[in-house]
Length: 347
Image (cartoon, rainbow, N blue to C red):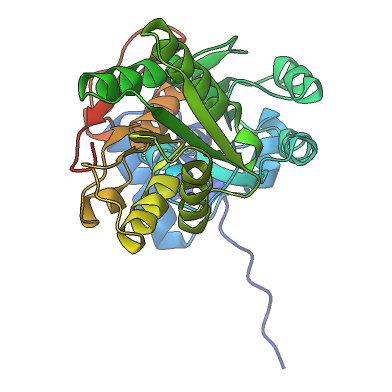
């Protein structure tokens, strides 16, 4: 015979144990900034002792929003976007906000469907990759009743908030470096139809920077996703067409590292016969001999800055947490983060 059913503890029970009002309990559970640290700790201790868990769904219905931040990225197949998401999570530390993730696989129709589903949950904010979206996606983002942060790129027309690096600056930076090292017959290898548009922007800026210096650019865009294998095959393909090349810039480090293996396998001396360079600054490049020349894209910092932008918008009275940020925060709605050329042994 079972005993009487025990009701779960309520916010009123927590308030009674902590010696505070129910409103204070609600504010603490929502992560509201206008509660002293002493009261916040009393409520948390009481909730922990009672085993109290707030009903997030009911709270969201009352508040007309959830504690969720919708994060939409194109891929999780390599470390680029996991590092961005790690930065977002770090930047949201100390708040009640939690991330929910959607992966588009570079499919605009899928991006629209994911965004529609996530917005239906009334998130507190949306963080989405890139500035170029399908018109349906742009319309939904413009109509969203919450802050929107576009990450990775600053070369375009942001919908609301934006943090990233300049793709045009990246193209100019690498062109200047290769020319300064004496390279004149230069190629470029990209992948998978140049998705996302950031790759195309970098290539166009790279080509324009070379043209201003009186140089042409040989281009090979592989119809395959970025990988070491695609990079190795892409290097072989462009050299088959242009065996005279003395440098190749790759859309990312994965492709460039594949080219390093192609050169090692085929007796091509790097950088004496052929210079190789990538983009992103993945940790892996420091573990490969010869060490790859690349442009470091501050992925973790982008995510952390995106989160801090949201916190400034959502909690205007809250002070920035210096422990949650890698560097000082700028002002404004568009944050242009710096790129860094990291010269290795391949140029």
